[in-house]
Amino acid sequence: MINILENISLKRYNTFGIDAKARYFVKVHSIDDIFDLLQTKQFQENRRIILGGGSNLLFRSDFQGLVILVEIKGVHFEGSTKSNTILKVASGENWTDFVELCVKNRLYGLENLVSIPGKVGAAPVQNIGAYGVEQKDYLHKVEYIDSTTGNIEVVDKDECKFEYRSSVFKGNLEGKAIITNVYYELSREWKPNINYKDIKQELDKFSFVKPDAEYVLNTVKRIRKRKLPDPLDIGNAGSFFKNPVVDESQFLTLKEKYPDIPYFLSNDKYKIPAAYLIEKCGWKGRSVGNCGVYDKHSLILVNYGNASGEEIYQLSENIRQSVQEQFGILLEREVIVVE
Ligand code: EPU
Image (tube, rainbow, N blue to C red):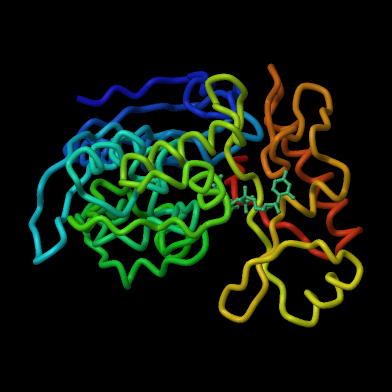
């Protein structure tokens, strides 16, 4: 049974804690709920957004459409190969709970992605990643309902077109696909992925320990806790911008002027931490009205209390302008702005 509500505050449904209202709001707990929803006039006649944990979006104002909160639950064994196990995870499961469940059951691969806020259904959409791992590295396939036909569809990993914080769900299937289940293929053999600078440094502090998966999991949790604000304490949506990618000549020009500029090589291009650019522009730790730039990590915009979505949006525009003026790079938002 679905129950479509009207004029609902979205404050508790977005990690920025923005008090925007949804014209219509509905929770779906099963695939049948989604089929019922497709038949309603509120679905057919309105703009729609699908919410998982609400951890990667900014409501710029009230949303004059239908917000769909996906609450489908369940983790099931789907099959196994010689060294891997495939799990089918419902899109409404909490991401971190799922990662922890995997480690408890000795299924490895996703440890570095622990503590990323949000639900499983959002993981493939923006291809979440951290500390040298992306969810695509372990994804098997994605099941969704095509809201234009009402059919259940499956896309294999290759068809998902995963890129840095992007996928087909942000491309051709945007606004069409309601993700219902995500399948991950995890390894039963433990192979640590501990080359990312932050992890390495942290593990080196206790170099006498041979890290098992639980140890890496806890290390990542500790690093994130130190650097990233918990949305339960301070409203935020993780990295607000993507790290920009520049070509060699642009990089060399920048390097001449800023010899300490950090970078990661990615497909012969140079990925520069947006956090560095923002910090160099003097934004780190600055507050403007009710919002600001987090003092321990400049890629994170925070809501100190009652910021409106518009205030945070304006702050982000000012930051973009500074970075553009000083570095000639226009930052792209990672967070989705809902107007
Ligand atoms: N840095 C600064 N100032 C800061 C913070 C960082 O100059 O205030 C520089 C440092 O040189 C640091 C470098 O930026 O070495 C990279 O920082 P960090 O390792 O924290 O990673 P990031 O590039 O800022 C990305 C992801 C994060 C992910 C981390 C760790 C994006 C947009 N963000 O951040 O993902 O947790 O790597 O892998 O790619 C998210 O997407 O919401 C998110 C938090």
